[in-house]
Length: 351
Image (cartoon, rainbow, N blue to C red; front, side):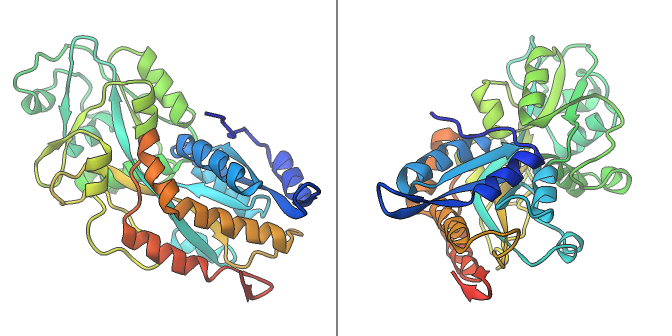
């Protein structure tokens, strides 16, 4: 797979935007270079999708995996064409910007990667995970962990929690779930892209957390599911709202999206009570300005952005998502999102 993901500084992104679109002498058409930044969680899917889009359209997409918080900041500063985020913008965040459109691209999950040399499988609940990351449960053979694993001999070893050092949508999804299932966590830490974790080790990005967990015996870290799949990290089996113990998979992630979804697609599906659902499942979004004429962007660049969004929702791209460990969007959300894309304009005119 050709990886288009690159780390882009604000200056580099501004340069890419300045490049904009160019006439292609061979095809007499206009080719564009689009730039985006944000969530690391969907990067493997985006690398594949942006590569396929470039082959199909002739437009290149350069994406910097700098975390959801960084991507949203770059969009706010109007130096990218789109931001990638695992967390939808809050009403307060949206009030600080020009109107935006959220376009979901796929579904995934936040998993608990674990490094337990003596144990093949460990079961955990949201309540227990919250208390581990709050520093209230410090040993793997704590009575509450053992109660969830009555047939497993757990080691008398200190737990090493690993968390994100950067502002991230993965952290937002994870802490949203902990806030839903643990009242003390909700009161003390809440749900946010950045949280002051009281114990553990920090690492940057999903790749960083996955790397630390894989190299640190007796650690546990929250990671975008694809990174755990790619590194073949053991993952905790999580108890969902129905009391079922469920492993993360394309099927269990998809199960979490059943039910009505809001028209603006800003919703969380953590702690779903659907049968067979993995409890820390989530959507991830590309976020763009509704009015595309900003920062000297051309109409061709705006049209290419809309074309990219439609490609991300296409049947072919959605059906490819499981190839890299993600779940496709529900058909209802694809339909809603295509309607939302119609709201995108250039100088007030629909694209």
